[in-house]
Image 1 (cartoon, rainbow, N blue to C red):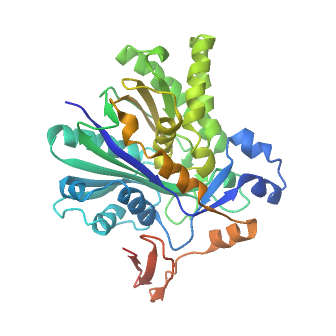
Image 2 (image 1 turned 180 degrees about the vertical axis):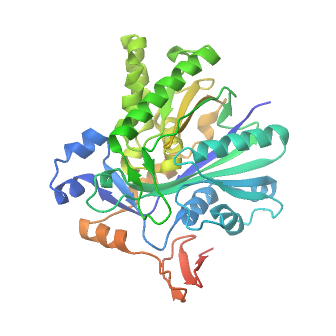
Image 3 (image 1 turned 90 degrees about the vertical axis):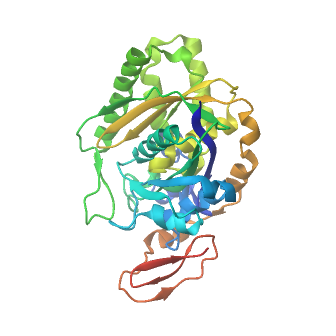
Length: 383
């Protein structure tokens, strides 16, 4: 019996900033962003939208009424929660009218939380093959204006429905993991933005991948030729490329070119969106499926990384007729239909925040699942 991804979708806000404009505003060579980081555009979110808006919007695109009756669990992987107690998943569960006898909870470990949720879903459906689990990865990456991390910001959500007999991809149940207690990226209570050791963060990422890759080869008796493509967590698209190239010495030149071509296909969407934290690996997976030269039966390797640091490598296999269940036109239309912001509009939107005075405030954002009111520090959403 196969367990895996039956449906997958993503959502980003209707606004973006061009990285050339940001480079000029910060008196920096645009090539540092377009080539040095591998980023062309950055998704921008208004204050009337949050991870609930993003997650519910992504999931609404793929769920049928039948799915909502069969879902036993809603898991949100995020590091951008708006509440230290109440989970975004229980709000999304209600907004989407999923059957009430379901578990709803969040998982947090930097950018790794979504993968932990995915594996939890795999375990549950393996034991309950007639049921389904909805996994949502939703985050808003913000580092502050005119900071070193500003060009690696972004936001969005990926929704994944895990079922038996999936239409898209099946788990191979070959996960290997690696944990190391480091402070490369962290955000203590009371801090609006993360604290980052940029050099350490890049090095720990690459070291984690090379170590887990060696462990994968040892445990699963595989090498690069066993994978049609390797996908990566993408805080910025050049980061994953550095990790991929770190294992090039063990490959032939033809093998290097093959995997790098697949990598280019996997970063098409992320170049236009930026950092999704927990969702970046899965946005890359969607980009690969939509833009890649793949076939049924191909094995795809996935490297998930969360600062602090936890990483996991696992693989999935493409199902027969998977291409029939892709939503390529809708994905491309979502990105193409966004509104470009000027630097002034971006900075104004960035600085706006939800009031926290406990009073009642109303808003007029007509976007599906946007915040229409906050009262007593409770957020009310469009439905």
